Image (cartoon, helix red, strand yellow):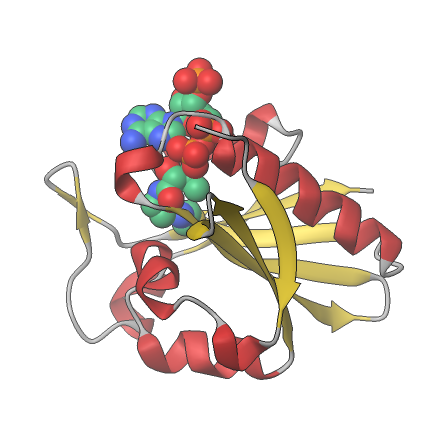
Length: 151
Ligand SMILES: CC(C)(COP(=O)(O)OP(=O)(O)OC[C@H]1O[C@@H](n2cnc3c(N)ncnc32)[C@H](O)[C@@H]1OP(=O)(O)O)[C@@H](O)C(=O)NCCC(=O)NCCS
């Protein structure tokens, strides 16, 4: 299998099925795609991963979504996308890249390995912003952590 290549694409071509792996709300995804930058990873012409970043303020960008096809996770594609997102944000003038994520799970290791630090907790975020309960590893997501990386 060849290494994936990364490509920025117009938001209307964003791979919704993949983005839903990271965020189960079509409405929220559609919202941040409007003013976000979407980059996909392609392997042998197949889209295998994606991320979306958008500006929050002049110097601060947010990683809104990052996802890899379930059958290809754990092979480094996520790390490739994450480091590309960090570089892109820096090139777009960001001094800080933020993200929100659940308070448990392998995603926390994934982000902290890239240097992100926990900067805040948003209690009950997933209860208030999603109509259906979100479960992972048999545990319900309730609180969201804010993570940030100084660039
Ligand atoms: C988070 C995600 C993008 C990481 O992508 P990936 O291609 O699997 O990442 P990598 O292969 O670069 O793995 C990085 C590390 O993440 C961890 N990891 C990734 N997938 C994992 C899984 N399914 N279970 C446990 N750990 C996992 C591993 O610790 C891995 O470290 P290692 O190198 O020591 O094995 C991917 O798991 C994913 O798409 N998950 C579903 C969507 C999601 O949760 N997005 C983030 C929302 S906050």
